[in-house]
Image 1 (spheres, rainbow, N blue to C red):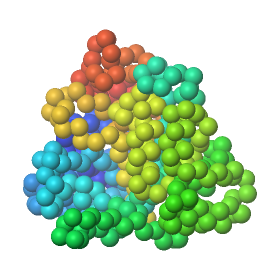
Image 2: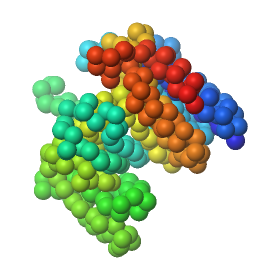
Image 3: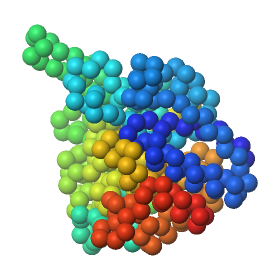
Length: 352
């Protein structure tokens, strides 16, 4: 099979972890008789520095024509520390999601047997956790009207959702639940927010179309609490943009490291695969970043975008082997030897 993949390394540690994912993907492609054409493109701070725009038109053309997108990370301190900056790397991420129609962010959270004690949560709380968040990605407060008034003394951000936006995200959630344990939780704040009441009534109306799915409705604050108390009580959770942004980062600590969790952003035109961690600029160029989340995102890409389950499983198996044998970067090594980012990638390729 010929695979045309847009490659957006981005900022900070993005290029380093992407390089390792490319090595692993190329090794899998050779092993299984595939041909990958990588098409690099600029985004984030790197694109601002080069062309003054965080998501250039040329990058969009490459993404729209690709079979899938593998993405690193966006963000740079020089923009984070300048509240007055008119152009920011994160604007490119939002623009990319909107233009590509990437409306559903799929974030699995699971535990690794060899790392169960790395989590700050007790073993008995998290053992067996295997849940998936579907976060709506192109609506809500991040895309609503925003601004200042009263001479800059008052700021506002407006949260807006349409019923259609809720339906298309919830449909993905119901469909995913049908392939798993047929449990779906709708996360909202319907006791306070009108948008959440729209979410709840819309999902309730959809229940009849999926009679086998057991649906629950929980307030976001209750879910935030239960994620650290009984995370394995959840299976598939659907929620709006802001709530999902916060809860998925909270859930990531269950695994023991944000450097381990992959994600996918499913779109109308194409899909994007990326690690959940940020650009971690403090580690950029030091060859110490954990590449496994990016590599596991590539595994999701093989399975979901191309239907290549065997290839995806081979990546997951070799990642689990590296964790079990302690071939890990410093964030996971403890008192044992810490491997460099590139050394982990090389070891994975060798063991494939």
